[in-house]
Length: 141
Image (cartoon, rainbow, N blue to C red; front, top):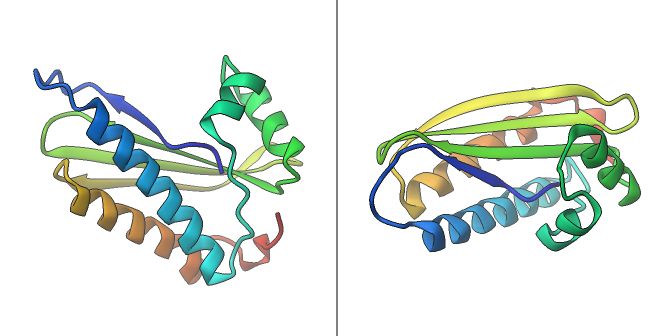
């Protein structure tokens, strides 16, 4: 699982970098824990430092190679888009590392830029994976 990313196009005057960094980390950690706990996936997390070191451009081929080097069968990419103080979207893509094909995709909308709204979005996304939206044969590293 790659570190979660944020695209903030809200143009809000207040610097929320600390809050967003904390929320992204919490969302990523919770998603990894929820998927592992459910037994659907054996989650291997790639750290931000490893990603910057091994794949500074973050192009698709490099991201897939980085996931492959961890022994992962799948690569999960998550991006939160904040378009205003109220409107948020969560884009999640799961790729088969071997075939380099997308095998799961979710675009979720959520309201509010606060800890609780981010937590609910993560719980809902984890449920999409756990409750069979993605192939149950996806077990493995």
